[in-house]
Image (cartoon, rainbow, N blue to C red; front, side):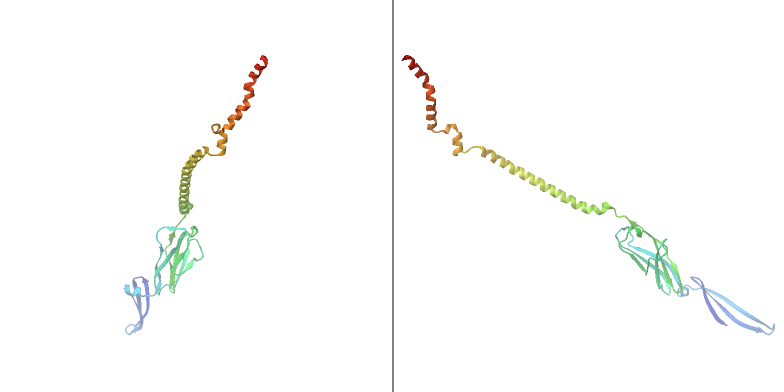
Length: 231
């Protein structure tokens, strides 16, 4: 009798068969072959047996919303004995592999990276693909990008407006004082020569004498004529 082979039909089911060499029974004179198949439920034994990868899955980090320009890391995990010696990454509807290794990182992600990804785990006993995971990339709107710029521009505009109003009010206040000064400066200085020349009240006595002398012939002319008539 000898134990010839061990076969695993199910993850937790271990089966073996025993082969008995032919024996000759004297009373019948014939040879007899005997084979016994024994199946035993041995979880601890089946888990240690070599097998291809199983329970292959993919996790995404970060798990929240993915925005353009950010980074995403996909990680593949699988149970295998012996351990997985090769991981390959694929994108659905794309024939060629995207990357190899247990982790696949996408830096500065863009909208073209949107899609479904899966990994393939492989050891010397076989390979197994994981379920696909969806990577959805959110667009970054132009308005969102310009919010900081618009904020700085608004602050600068308000600052410039305040400076303009301050300068205008200060100039207006200073202008009122200048107008008063200009109005006061219109009044002539009584001690100036020009004021003396223009002011009739300040003319010298010689001016009156000269005026009388020049007006004398016209005043005395009738008297001279009257004297001539009496002669």
